[in-house]
Image (cartoon, rainbow, N blue to C red):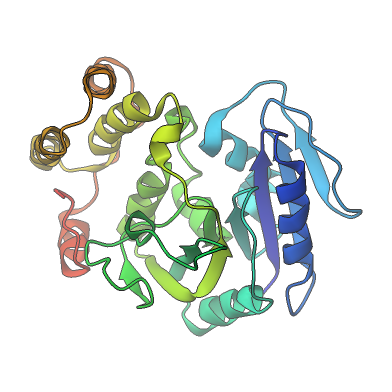
Length: 290
């Protein structure tokens, strides 16, 4: 299998970016072609052979990754699968790419692989980085219903069949949107504990737009993908869960503003998943109301 890699950057982590690119270059097996997308910022110096694309404005995480996909031809058709890696991440093991090739080749129905994210100093994997409800054991690989945006591999046939990431999301939940569409088309998603990306432990709320985007995109996700009867159930569960978590006043205000925005603004094309996909998600341990 021919692999490519897409990395988006704001140009503010040049040392980490170079270390990541060196770890990609050091992977076993055939060379991985890499495209670095400067998302509204110049791309720092990169090693020879790494292609770059500089965008005049920040298109957000899914928009920037979509540009990287198209750099490999329509829907990434020049390669068989694409790695999507955070620019401050690092592949500590040299066999990750080979494990990806082997996994895709062994299972023609496997569409997406989610890597395990581990802190480089402690080796700890945060619970939120295990894309399933039963997340107590991050060392257990399993089938899952979503994946981690900056540490994954996607078969390009999936993108060609179901479309790219939802660019208008800008930040948050774009992976689940693609995952649900892939599952509805019959593809499977694996979480692999043996495929590791080192990444410093951070809180998602470090992003100023976090609470608004999470709420708005949660509504868009449901409106775009769920059968009509499940939309209020799914969003009602998340509203209650948010209140139970007792966010700060400003955070709750931003969240509620994003929730309203999600109902008041266009969400893109609506393609509700089949009921058999709902059952499939349920059998995988995460019915689409949780």
